Length: 82
Image (tube, rainbow, N blue to C red; front, side):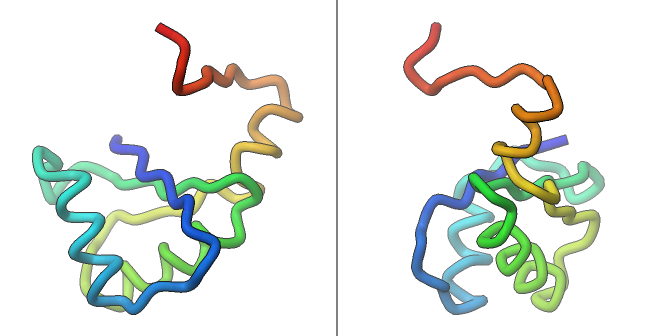
């Protein structure tokens, strides 16, 4: 599974998003699931829909985002952590 974090607050065109996703996941096999995440799950839900419409398969949104993930007691690690 590959995690793809969406941080832009501004909606992006599907072509840009797919290009960005492919650059971020160069080593991703087409068979591997892709989970799109953001803080609340809203931006990642939109990104997931755009990626699915563009023909990518096995793409899922982390519903509720990292906020819900943390609220439910799952571990979170900051980017600055080693």
